[in-house]
Image 1: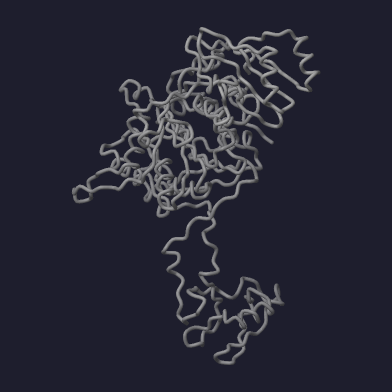
Image 2: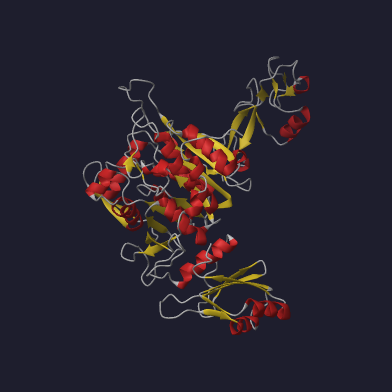
Length: 559
């Protein structure tokens, strides 16, 4: 398979492995939770910070759990003012750090920077996605060719599903000097062939096409052409006479067309009274009655999404302004209906939806509105930088707090806005809650130093269990007193650790004897601050008790 080459690729391909694992620190004041409920990772989440660090921090608890991912990364048009900030120390990246990515012709590496920014994020998103999940990525002509190559490499060419065109404008720009663009793309990939898309709900307008002029007891129907575009010579078996039961005359199609089914099937349709000859029974050709009751419950999604169905960018900007009460000039939000369609296609009522380039929070708005309609309990995770451009840094305009979170809060609680005539109106709240978190300090430094601020027991336990097993641990089973943090495949995992600088917990023969009384698994992995036994004693314990014990030092043997 052809692959895409770009400056920095040799480093960036494995960069996600070296990104330090950071803590997620909760902010109860910015969270919106029911009275008495504490912030946590098991509900809706808004995470402020670099999405690369946030995605890595989510792995221990959310790897393989996200059903639907939607992202809207920078289109790299040269006008967004986005800054390359991934903290790579290699010489080829130093000149990029903290600098605004320039326009075509002004920045010879703008596409390299974009690919280097996207690659590790796509790898981590893939790890978070369920085997039966799918990812949708908004993009335009500037980077779709590069993105398609990156996605083929990360997700696999065989997992490409579609390139959707959505009509982002309702009219062309008359002052455009070239060919005016009217659409953007959604690039869609599945995690594996286990993904099964859902049907889109039928609309009232579509159902109105079904009528019942003959009072058929089977309900409304609409006529379908009973011929097909083949000639008598091409399909002689489909060219035969049909008797009109009303007139008794034999009817055949023009020899340039034939009936669309065999004579046996036609006999069945006649017996079931499925051929319609018009109200007075004298139509020249019959139609097939297609009953609404036999139509599948929804519509098969296709790759053309017109603005009448999913909205357009001008509508999205006006909606954001209506919700926030002030213009959000720096944002180019997507329509809620666009994201609602993505969620409808790729998620069920109890699934998790992730957006790691959250922007104005449209994805959460869409999920909340669908949950309100179908009484679902989908959860969402948004990740958003506080500042995306140097201008926002200078103005201290925290997008995540002032736009993303504020929009979601108002959509949940309801908000007031001015109607078309200037009269004050109220939009009812959709209900819901969320925890607000920030990407905090690294769990440990580059040299596995836990630092002065020691991580809580649970944070270290989640990290150890995930790096050992590639699964998240069940926090209900984690027991700091006994050190037990989980089991999988007949193997138990323990952490002997006190998050203070006054004591160290050790693994000794007494410790192993205590575990032996309760743990029936034959294999144990124990992370401990001290090892108080000789290797000879450990081997003797293993032989006498039929156990396999692997001892790992905290922090030095952390992976």
